[in-house]
Image 1: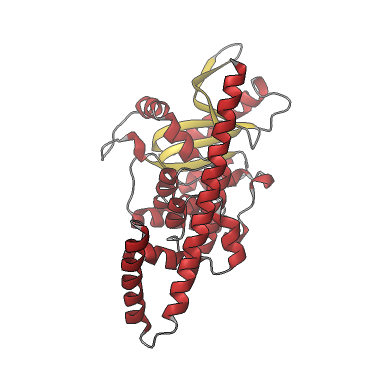
Image 2 (image 1 turned 180 degrees about the vertical axis):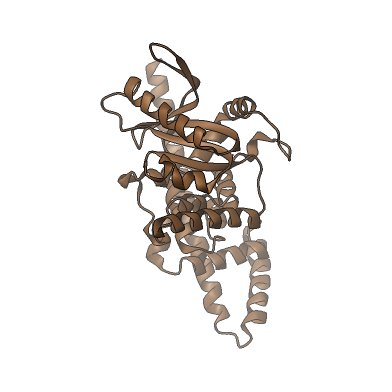
Length: 333
């Protein structure tokens, strides 16, 4: 009955409000505890040794009074939380938006711009703590930034500007496919695996993407063509076409994608849609092809590398830096 569903919704909303209020209160309490710890440490002559003794003594006292949750490690987290957000106004702004688990993960990010990015994305995209942890570990922010090398880190634009490059990463990481190294999977096998892991794929693609079809057929009067993957981004208000290549990028691949995008816009795009975006997902990029093909001038076409495994931190940083350097070199030519 309708009234029963309405009552259930009232209770669900009340529980969510209560949870949010409790979370905000506890997060504020943790910040205040961290502040007290730091101020007390500053009174000691040997701050390192004195600080350690403070945490040990405080852990024992709070555990005896309040039970679990006040271990030495947790108190260090409270202390770090205060040091990360020493301004009370900033703390108040972030305390009620995310869970304490979110904050524990974000405050370990050293780069201030990256930390702010994760704070905003967690709130706007409702990232779970598990998704947040995966994105931090795969340098989600840095991979977005790698396609915007012409902008300082502090100038990553807000969603409202709808800049296409803010929605594209390089490289993409598909470790959730569980493909063994070295990988010899065919394009169709990887394509199928991506769709079978669609939720993880969408999370990796980022904000605004919704799946439309795989092997999307476009027909002309004389021929049929099949596009590997088609998505729609409701923020950019356009279709996004993915062409998957398990080999090194070639100029033929670029020409094919360019044709697909032109055909799609001519035959499928609606009047209220923005021009479609084409992305070549390739196992290896050829910078010469990127430089001398239509990729260099067409702002709707991109070639990005994908990694079917989780790289080491050093490998991923090197990959990102190579991409940023390549973009800067093209801008200076």
